[in-house]
Image (cartoon, rainbow, N blue to C red; front, top):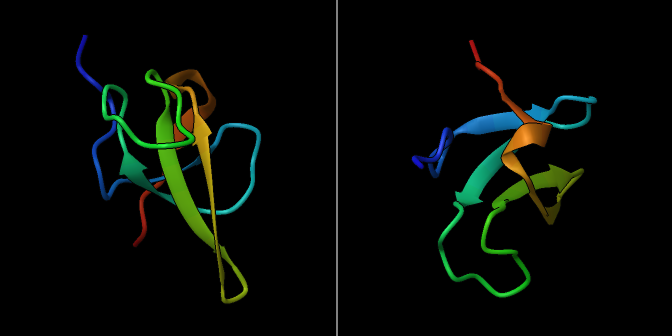
Length: 64
């Protein structure tokens, strides 16, 4: 099954929260990320944060 999102896409959680950038996709071997999740990064003020989320929790956001 193909991934809906790709590296560099801007997403947010369906429940709300900050805009995040996809930095890793399902199938990539990245420490701290489950094989079927997306690794997302964002900034809290000037501090980088990261987390991994299942596809069902994310929605694409468009910056205009």
